[in-house]
Length: 164
Image (cartoon, rainbow, N blue to C red):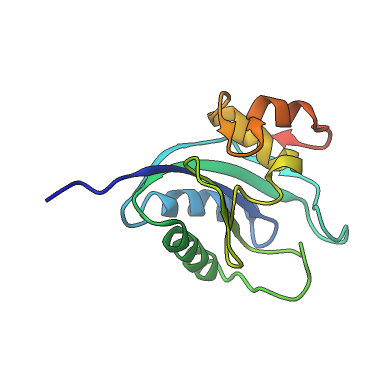
């Protein structure tokens, strides 16, 4: 039997409800338990102001590097199952508070535009709270269609991001 092909994927994590540090820490441990997936490394935790409505708590963010043989849609489904296990409630309010947010940021060198999943993540290039922890664990990364991670990071203002 042939071994399944694995791909390196990066996942963004965020939380600002119900003890966000514990939520992200628990989610990082749970990523290690996903089927056909191995947790390679994780960034430090970062505290950031909310991107959406200002009347919500600060976020705790991190990035994880995974090696997985799950397809991009299967990985997304697994991440959404973890969100539901953390009592994530999806509302009509965009960028509102949440117990856990998990995003597929990158999946190998794939570019995917699908109604359910876009890779690279559409907001990746303009979100310092994603790029800073991503650069911590993959400083020489080339982002498909966008170029070197270092170039994306250089174009952003890191103000307001606190490494914990």
